Image 1: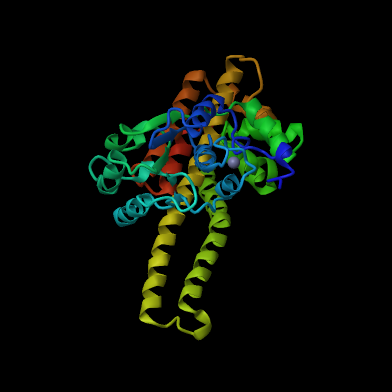
Image 2: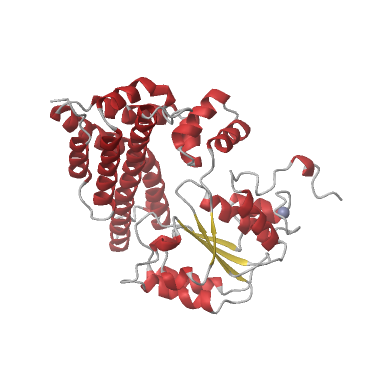
Length: 395
Ligand SMILES: [Zn+2]
């Protein structure tokens, strides 16, 4: 009996990773049994594919051939996210909770049901706590310090510094590269079948963020919203235009967040109602009302986080315009990130000096810090930012 007739054309679990050759080699070795360890930390900028690397490695660890062949049952279950011995921990709120972590540590200590390893992936290891409030991280610490023989922890975070020192010092860290424009473009053509022109645009505009690149390549509305954001700098010529731009930015972020959020919230409510049997009109019970309140609170936190993520990306798009303007004013060769809007970029470059452009980039990062670190309301932070981005000579 043949296991599969399509083995030759089957994609291995590593095929979806972009520009991560050195990391893949280490992980392939480990899956084959060389240099295996029980706690790994994958770091890299958003969109570099940390979760995808974790998914591929988790699958390869379970793979019947120990290679991540992509063809066996274990690989198939692993890549589809339904392997019983691979647990995914995601947090859309800003923190992971200590009780959830205690439960998780307990179930992670169990012997694998069908696979070789009990694999736990923590996608947001940066939300395990801070040195001042490390309770969730501490719940995990012992499990990593004195691991059960068949358990593997895969942690993902933007940088090593984002993870509690007590945790990161006990992990083997692999740092992912920001994939190059050419790698991303090639991936989009191969994986999504988009034209080379679209792939080249999306790869440049995403600046190495794979998920963003795919959204830009495949979704017209995403392209339109980005275009609106990057056309802002050239228009900031008066105080009035700065105020308008701040409002527009906040609204664009809200629109995009709502698009992402609406469907997720509807599904969560459906699930809750299914649990409480809405067909029996049991939704007036005290337990249901309490659960509904809990869900609504959680959804509020998630929505707030999503809005910040979306604004954050818009700010990075703005930064790309100022970097392009510097490239134009110093006459650097090569394509701009925003090659398609070279005219707008030139307007900004003509109105400013490179020093002023650097100061503007600083202003964007200040706004980002105010919102993400100090909880300044977005509208307020965006207004100070756009005023600081006003082109000299405007009035
Ligand atoms: Zn396999």
